[in-house]
Length: 553
Image 1 (tube, rainbow, N blue to C red):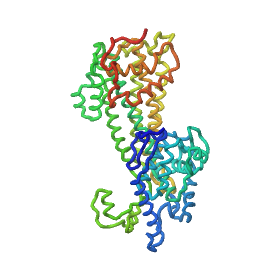
Image 2 (tube, rainbow, N blue to C red):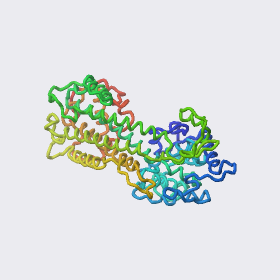
Image 3 (cartoon, rainbow, N blue to C red):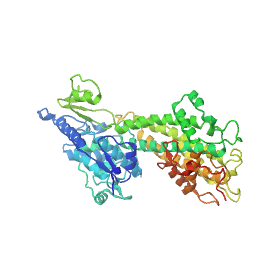
Image 4 (spheres, rainbow, N blue to C red):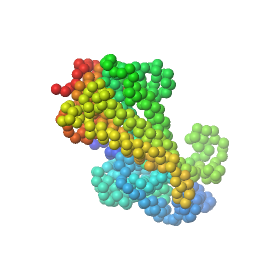
């Protein structure tokens, strides 16, 4: 049964937490304020299209009265319902595996929220019906390949829209089937659309934005995990925490590094250096605050792009009801008493229709490329820290590969090999996509951002980064089992205890793929890392640290 925590309102733009929750059924509320502004935008669209009812004749509005893309100079279909098919049929050219349902439903939530702003000229029924689908498990089947991210995510959103009309394929309760019976099984009716509705549903960057936002969240979770695991590594090895010195970090001058080092100092509060470590630790320990801090600064840039895209309207054209005074109030500027000049937009006594390029997903493309770079370097750090931990020449004399009896047991050897493969895969995928423009569509789209590819690639990479964090966590858990000291910092001890409860020691050897995933899931779970800087400590483990011994019998 749904509860109030399962409700998202369309009065304001959704945040990324709402996008994550959209993977499961939830209530999307359409209130009177939303209905009023959508209805007002729809009335203005009809008035603008039909000459405002003053005998001025029908106005040319892209997609409502015209063809599409390179064929916009030709007339569209006269019948409005037929113009919907004119919008969608030719876009059924996608290929490849289906996108994850979590991305598709998140994209549809963003599309619904964008249309609810009242600037797209769609009918209120479209918004109401889109909102209704989220209370079910219905999810369109959308192929991965086909979008260049320039006129928004045309091909993937066309597949989603067709499924909502009962065409193509969809998922219901996780099972792929024809869209029509999936709609019926969910208790939904096929959407009836005109050309304006159809174009507004496909002509936006919702898939790109959803994938970027979800990837950002996953990379931020991995960043928090690696910050905590770096502290745990330093503690179990007995490192001196001087490399986190506050004056040192202030002299460095980078805000992200200052903040990350402060979090690491809090996590390591109470640690007792062993006195046996080298004067200067390897860079994977000593330079961790600089690396993680640079990642934090980069992620803050991505945060800004995601926030803007979540709150923006990315389709074309847009419809602005009201005169100059209302426009000035909306834009935060002073009105000059004029209407649209016919260049940027077609003005009427009631507002303006503006044809532009808000669908050009370059900001998300740059942000997703930045995420890819951050992911690759965080992956490098996790892999190098695990490599240090399994190497007896650098791990303080622990057995090679953290095996209980080297030779007859192999400990983390397979996991260490797999992390090498994961890092190689991440590096291969990290090439920037947002500058690889190719002209298309008879050179109407003569420059394109490839934001969709950048975002989906970063989403894939973020999943691999989570597995690298799980691998490192498994190694730290095993290190204490085979003889490393128990952490002396209470927060590090609490993290180790949580890992030990989730994952048994490797004794004897066993397949560890599920253990890596379990550790990764634990690190990503809300509440393990309190406020992003230390493990949550709700019991006595946080204040009482047992003697520095392992848990090996």
